[in-house]
Image (cartoon, rainbow, N blue to C red; front, side):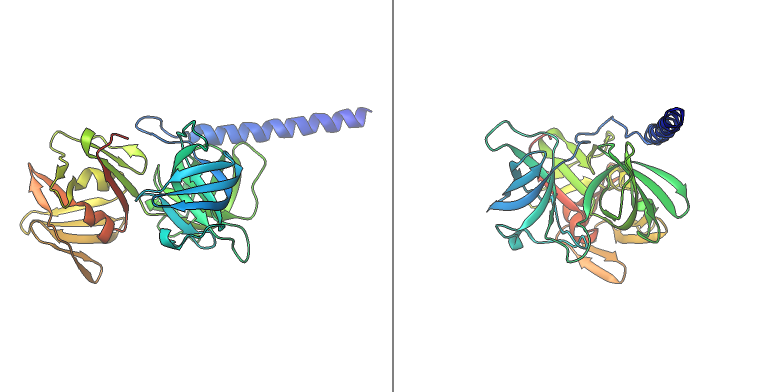
Length: 318
């Protein structure tokens, strides 16, 4: 009897230590609340039972067993095996899907929400990639980071061997991660065996003059303008780029800008020119960047066609 009590006491101490350690990790990595609209991510795993223009219906298990999800320009639709993009037009009724959405869901029947991501298909080997938003990041060393999900339910270790350019992962970044096992602690902890950084998302709400980048409303300066030119919208470059982890080098004599991601040049262009250089490629757009009140404004297409980001423009607030 004494031996059983001793073993029970040791077990309780170990569980207390594990819980305390996990709570310490969470305390270090709590996501910042200010400016965030959707920290919580809900999922439903099942099948596509309806595919309509701009929406899908998913039935299965998870947060909601039956839900209609709006698909926007910022919704990620990706292959479950490798995270490559999947065209909306190729979705098939009855296809396997894990839908991620939130945070608001209507009280209609069936409920309706806005999709963050659809992870489609069934991998031939291994499990499907798991979608997550980065709530916060802790740099362990030069080649390793720990990413706490915005839900606070999982803490994923990612190495530079798994995903190069770890510095590109920031609060609000959206990822697909794969791992073999997860601890039973709170949050669950795992080491990623594969990871894909999904394209950054930008939502522009013209009516309110609001820009949301990777889920975070940007603080616009007095001279940061959003100009609707009819066929395109000009957006302030610096405030968006710096919030997404880019740096800007301004060459005044040539009126040229270098946009850098870490040590790499992501794009180069000049004020007034419709040509944008990306690596060895020169991309021509219908609209040139403009200098307004000392601020560089670029067309929406710069973010979509040059930087391959996902952008939606609407007249709503959020």
